[in-house]
Image (tube, rainbow, N blue to C red; front, side, top):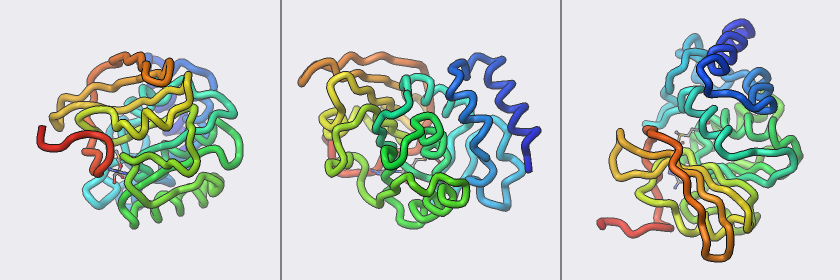
Length: 219
Ligand code: SAM
């Protein structure tokens, strides 16, 4: 189902320059995005737009997801934490690229969405991805350190616990900004215990990261 639509979407994302890495292109071709979209809007699954997944949350547009994944230099065998499971689609793509059992974790603060994401992952063959309910601003210490952390909701700054849970040489990608519409996709590499190399990779717009760890509020 929707195979032609998926193929055409991937062709467009390559042509527009959003997708260039072979293993990420293959993951986009393989993971059935429509299985992660609520049934009543499934026909929009392969349009390049964000879609509602309920509880005031969204699954990002495919082009944004391509930017996020390509910017992280994902590789087979890495241990990856995603913050903000939502539908589970990003986690499935990551699992497809990383390709090793028990090395992909995703944390979601809303119970019902964690359940939705978990069910979608299981149905599509990625049931081994561990979905945890919790506040991802605090990271997931139990399984740290991480090679890669992908944050899919926006904070005023990079949450410190997440940076601290990165391996030296590890990378975090996250939307950062104070305003709902004007945010920046940041990629930061942990170069040493206290050294972080931060790159700005363009504008973006995400739902807020809601949590209690990592940055001062009200400032
Ligand atoms: N990655 C998701 C996907 O593939 O569908 C889409 C993520 S959606 C843009 C952002 C998600 O982050 C929402 O599901 C939201 O509930 C979640 N979120 C917000 N703050 C969070 C936090 N502190 N910890 C964990 N999840 C959080």
